Amino acid sequence: MDNARKLALKALYKIEEENAYSNIVLDNILNENRKNLSQKDIKFISELVYGITTWRLTLDCIIQSYSKIKIKKMSKWVINILRLGTYQIVFLDKIPKSAAVNESVNLCKKYANKSMGFVNAILRKISKDDFEKIKNMPNSKEKISKLTSMPIWIVEELLKEFSYEEVETICKNSNLKPKITIRVNKLNTTKEELKEKLQKYNINAQDGILEDFMYLKNVSNITKLKEYEEGLFTLQDESAGLTALILNPKENEKVLDCCSAPGGKTTYMAELMKNKGELTAWELYKNRLNKVKENAKRLKINIIETKKQDASIFKEEYINKFDKILIDAPCLGLGVIKRKPDIKWQRKPEDIEEITKIQKQILNTVSKYLKKDGILVYSTCSIIKQENDKIIQEFTKENNFDYEEIKIKNLENFKNKIEEKGMVKLYPSQNYDGFFICKLRKK
Image 1 (tube, helix red, strand yellow):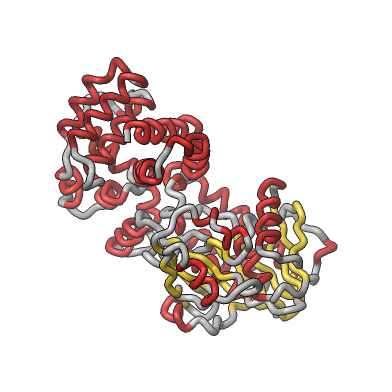
Image 2 (cartoon, helix red, strand yellow):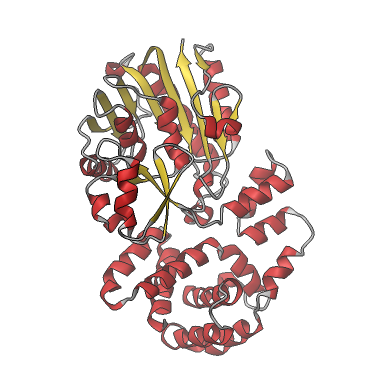
């Protein structure tokens, strides 16, 4: 466990020092040290890195309540050692407080020798009661922020649209550990066949809300399974899968996915098309476009034509070319924080204006590529109106209402989530991520 804590600390330091993504840093550190790590170690390191990344604001509030030194003035080694110890004391039931304190002090010997006494004194004062104190605070935006480790500006944005109770629920759900959800590739197998194969690994597969999806239990290293490499399934949240289902691409249609990487929605559309037709996938960056190619190859899909293309730049050659278009627009990503907790610390209030400008530009440009009576789906994995409802309202108005929202059918299990006639609004929950989906028809 000593080595596990050391590697977790290195990961946390690198995430903060380089403003890097926790999943990438963690994967690299685990791959470099896998030979010397047990499964228990890997699980513990992952728990520490993702847990501390998720709960960073709350941990800092607790630490600051006992420290005369401001967190901003602490070295990155010291604050991350303190977070490491505090997280174990407050959030992990199986770690004795003495072990959390002693191992944190031991880490100081190598990374912050002069701060051993300081770290020891702070951690000895901290207990699980500190989180209970936050729970007992009077209701306020500050309480939601500290209780759910959500930056105050995000809480304020949500309070513009939702009630206090709704915002608290959204923020709490954004800290849930996401389910492992897979999409069955029916080009290569059936759900029942795949269930039987997974059972051989003692993996419990349960039906999801949507027909092609399953939830997995008792699983680790899912992408290392032979069945994954053979293209029998893909990791995908059901809310993301909904975008392809709502677009409902058919065999032999011409379909465009203009923001396609890493290819989850693109490949699902190809599966729904039974690998017949023309599916064009655009992406701005070559390395991200390669991800689409890799996923298509693994899933044995050959109708996807990839192209490095900026969807916001108008190209006359594509006017009226496509039967159906998916715009899964770049967004703040506030609906997927439970999967990508780094979003909370990397996004800033001023990003809203910048990202909505890009969203409008893409929608206005790409909509011109749709045939008459064609279908366009606009989606984001975000949950605020500036990126969603407002974008659609402005778009239809600016285009003289040449585009209309159309009724979304065949979604009985999500029936209560369909708002108005052409929109689905999902908020973070145990079963799925937060998502906005709108279906439009070109008159």
